[in-house]
Image (cartoon, rainbow, N blue to C red; front, side, top):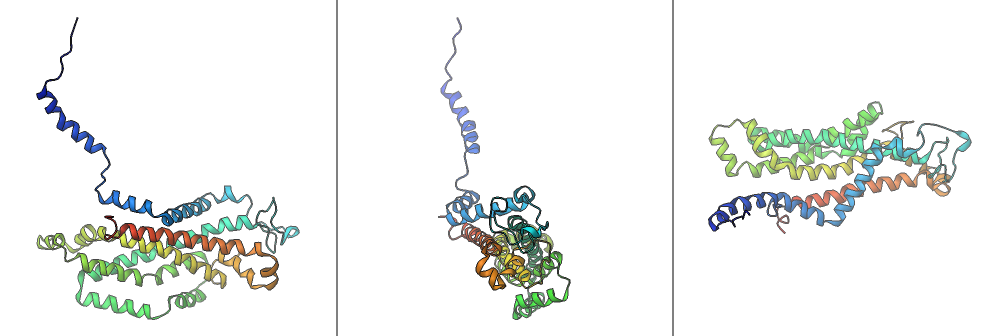
Length: 312
C-alpha cells in the first residue's frame, strides 16, 4: 500500500509565487486604461443604443440583396404609387419601384459616402495637423493661415459650387466632401501635438537624435488617436447629411441609383407630401436614424476617451 506525502510548507511556499503569477495573468486588468475605457463606454446607455442602431444600418447595407427582396431599379408602371402592402411593405414610387428595396440600398450609398469622405479628410488632417503642431514656426503659421482661409468660406456652399461644376456621381461626391472637411480636424490634431510635443518622452527622443518622422508617427500620433476617432465618428453624421442634401438638390447621386436624399425630392410635390407619405417619410426617418446613431455613439466615445472621466 502506497501513501502520498502531503506537500511540505517549503514546497507550498515555492509554488505560491508561480500560482499567483498565473492567476494575475488570467485575471482581467481592472486598473488598466483599456478596461476603464470599455467600462465607461458600456455605461453610456445612449452610446450603446447608438452603436446598436449603427450596426443595424451596417448589416442592412452589407446584406442589402438578401434584405431588400426586390431589385431597386426594376420598374412596373402598373404598380406606380401603390400604398404599403404585403408585397411592397413601403409601397412603390411614381414608376413602380419598390420603396423598401430603395431604402435598404440607399443605406449603402450614405454609409459608403460618409466613410470614404471622412477617411479622406482624416488622412489630410493627420498629415497637416501633425506637421503644423510638431514643426511650429513658419510651417505652423503657413498651414494655419491656409486653414483659416478655408474656414472663412461656408463649407456647404463650397461643396455645392464644386459639385455643380463636376459631373454628379458618387465618386465625385466622396472626394468633394473629403477635400473640404479637413480644417476643423486639422486644428484638433495640431492642438494635440502642441500639447504632446512638450512631454518628457518626446523631449528625450529629440535629445537622443530620433528623426522627426519617427517621433511624429511612432511616439506622438498614437496618443492622438482617441480625439481623432471621436471627431471622425461625429464627422460621419455630417457627411451623411451633406450627401443627402446634395442628392436632394440634384447635385449628388443620380437616378437610378437609390439615395435617401434623392427620394426626399418627391416631398416637394404637394400631392405627394399630403397623400403619399410612404414615398418620402421612410427616407427622412432613415436619415434621422443614421445621424442620431452616429451622434449617440460619438458622444459615448468622447466621454470614454476623456481623461477627466475615464478614471471614474
